[in-house]
Amino acid sequence: MAQETTSRSSFVLLQVGGQRFALSADVVAELAPPVKLHMFPHTSPSVAGVIVRRGHVVPVYDGGPILIGKSSSAQRFYLIARRRVGKTAEFGAIPVNGECELATGDMNPPPDEHPDYVKGTLAVGDALVEVLDLDALIASHAASRQAQDLPEERQ
Amino acid sequence: MKSATERGTLPRRLRKPETVVLFVVARQTFAIAAGAVQEIRSTDSLAGAATEIEQPLAPKVTHYFERGRQTYYVVNAATHFGLPVTRPTLVLILRQRRAAVLVDRIERMTEISSLHALPLAFTGDERRWYRCLAYVDDAVIPVVDPGGFLTAAEIEALDSARQSAEAQRELEGAVPS
Image 1 (spheres, rainbow over the protein chains, first blue to last red):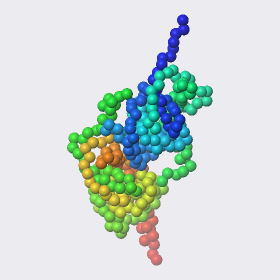
Image 2: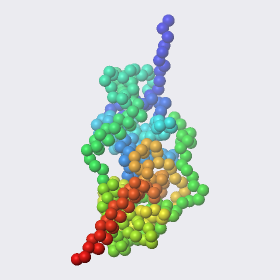
Image 3: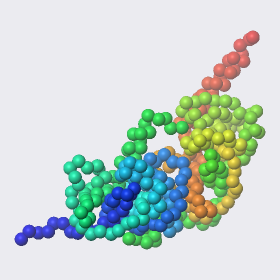
Image 4: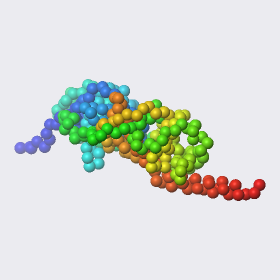
């Protein structure tokens, strides 16, 4: 008798610029309503600013340039998720359009040639939705921005 | 999903409120501990006392001045923070530092009762620039680290450039005309 090796997991489906992606529900803390994005000078390429949520300062990562080729910071809701930073964990927010839903299913392996930030796919209806690795997405964005900034000299 | 209290990221509560000076550079507000500022002067008042200096390692410093036995390097805060360069009107002379900081204006002094650590997501120069973040009047304001305006290497390079320039001037002054 074949033994089932995968268990069904929960995912949060989110929309960035009209495209659907999934994040493991384990890392998602909450969907925050539209709040003010606070910005101040810094040199961290993946960070768009911070929001204040429940008395805490939460960094906002703009995944748009990597996922859809343009900034997603115009989106007004924030999906707050836990990510690893070195040996510790920290909450971070991703701008989303607010249409998030919970889905249950088995994560399938990613396509053969996939970006590092896609850790698998999830069948949702007739569509295959990419399951994101938040840490890898942020690292991709930072690397991409640093590569773009290289020819320019920062003032 | 976890509630905020489960996240373990409570802001640092201060036993006593801290008095800070809110200052503006290129429309961006910053805070600095009032105790870190020795004096606030207009840039006009420094005009006669400041000497030009050029050092590629610290292009944000264009002048220095002597006060007592101390040399202060004048840091343009807009250049330091990568903001558009403006016309500063005030200079903050820092206490127990070798830096004086050009700013556009002082907003006010205020007391802050809680501080937030800079999130670890910030990994660049800002970790040296800022001590922490403060939430003041519905705005997140970086609290600057007075020691972050000039690194030890920058001060060393500036000292060397200044001494060379002064020696050159003395030499030129000694040449009979």
